[in-house]
Each structure stands twice: as structure tokens, then as C-alpha cells.
Length: 206
Image (cartoon, rainbow, N blue to C red; front, side, top):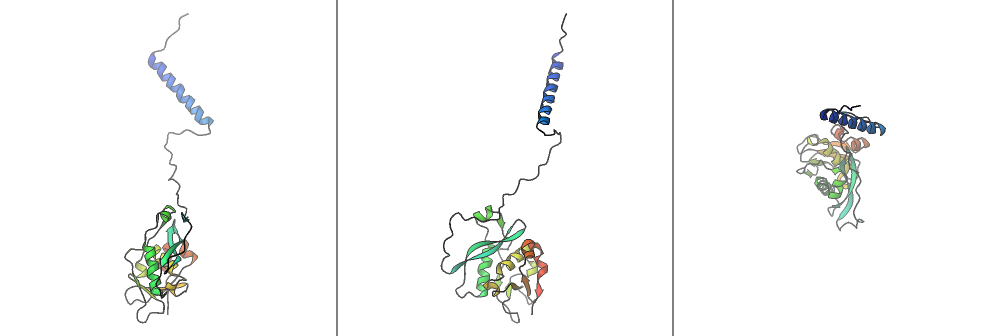
């Protein structure tokens, strides 16, 4: 009895078909459903920890400085980060406000950057003391508070609140460079978790 031999092209096609079928069986056996459509697995998970871990134990602050918390942005919220801040000898509010502003304007250190922290405070922002007729403790910014990025305003308010910059008060009285009446800003849990809404929280002060 003679055996019929298939043409080479037919044999090759059959072998490829068998290999594809075997591969599909392996995929199915692993519980993975084969698909011809590319799958979007989404972006890689963020490595931000929002926790600053110092490489070595913190030493005592230098003379004339103190460890204070500045509010930096991590993810979508504000969190306190300890910094060694050079303070004025008198401890007066404007000097403290300027020192803290400088810290907020500094780019995060490599350790802070690795943890996911950032700052939105403009480099050219300035702060001075109150003007004629202002309530005690008023701080006048180089731009109107409403003209600041909302997150930057939240950083200032939550960094200043409770410190000598705000005379130890929880409400920070801020105004702009002109004669527009200053307003009081309070750092609340809402301010920290939704800093983009800070612009609407200022209240008139007497």
C-alpha cells in the first residue's frame, strides 16, 4: 500500500497550527485567557512614601536655629516636614515668617524628593509686617493672597499657624502689597487634605 505524501507547504502550515493550538492550551491551563487585543495594565505604582527617613540621627540644631515643621505637598495633601530653621534673635513675627518662607521656597532635599514631597511656593514671593491700620500680627505678602497658587497659600497658612509668625495664633492674617484689607486664614484638616480650596477660606478680620 502506498503512502500519500503532502506537499511541503501544507506540512509547514499544519505544524504551525499545531504549535499555536498547543500554546493556547498552555495559556488556558494557567488560567490566563488569551487575547489578541493589547491590555493596558495602567501606570506603574507610585513609589512616594510621604515619610522622611533621615539617613543618620538628627543632631542638635545650630545656635540661632530651631527644628520647625514646614508644610510640603505629597500626593494631593499637605504634610509636616521637619527642618532646621535659622530664626531671628528677637523671635519677632516678621523675621520668623521670612525664615519659614525661605524654607518653603527651597526645593526639597534628595531625601524629601525621594519620599515624594514638593513645594508650590513661588521663589520671588516676599513677606513684610503690617501696614497702617492693619490688625496686629498682619503679614503683607508681595502679591495678593488670591493671586497665589491655592496650594502655595495653604502651605503658608499651615506653616505659619501657631508659630511666632502668627503670634502663636491659629489664624494667620494675610494681606497683599496694596491697601486691600487683610483676611484671616485658618489651617484646618480640610486645608491640609484639600489645599486647592484654600483661596475661598479667608475671612474678614477687624
